Image (tube, rainbow, N blue to C red; front, side):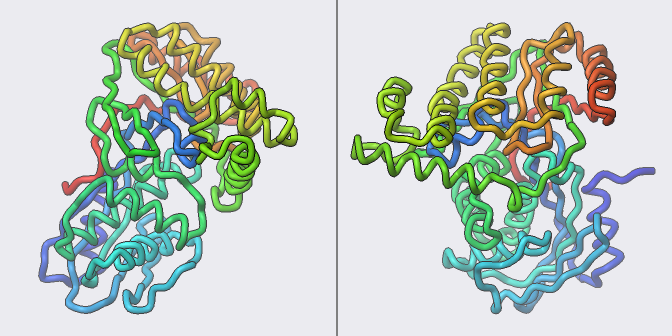
Length: 387
């Protein structure tokens, strides 16, 4: 019988660690971003939805300052000395564990040692935020073992800092916030400046389907950091014309158009995507609340076109997947999701058409690309918790 990640971590913990303490288990979800791509680090709006793919940790405290961590996927065990942590670190899987411990300690928290086993079922490099799920599952374990109060927004900020400074990926707050603070049955309309979050119920009779292209990318080695730097450079230029501009969040479409002559063509395209995309999460939330599914689909389709043509982070496989999805009856709209350069798309589909939709899309995608497609019908899930 195949074990779930929760079953795997419990079983492997008992095999590896001779602990007098029965291990606890923490779980943190992956997420699909429904809309609002590359807007979080521009202090804009996003709409992530935690999903029923997750990372699990089985853990028990130690009486010293050592973290022993085992990854089921690679069958590797690493040791991390809490007293020797310093940023920057590396980008191996164990560096994400070390990064979380470093961020907590750097924030003034006293950590005890811990034995921990990690497993998950989020495809790595798919754009479903396996790294943030790992960070949050480890944070939940460290906080419980060290008797640190669990505050989801604060933990999201600390894990973002861990990834930014220790690992070296300049991600925004969205992934960590979704993994920490999501609500079951809902997406989150998140203001990445204030961190105010509003639950957005998924309408009855509809589902979001994740469509995995099978093409993987390593975020820290991709053009993600380059896109972020381009946005920051555009803000520096635009601020010279309007000192009130702090981020692209503060730029209105008409104002950007009036200042186009100040920017080089590439920077203008990048900024144009972000300025328009920041407004789309609110539009999608309104559409879902009103059950205006046709409008919701149009907003998603517009987002994909902007990411493809202006931000240039799509790929032939993502384009083929979204086109196949839109060509299937029952699909209201589809777009790439995540940082891009590979990974997944997401589609809004009528519940009564899901089986036919997934079969049609898989066949069409395979015909166009020669690759198999993996389709996952998502259940909106809660944030990190103890099982």
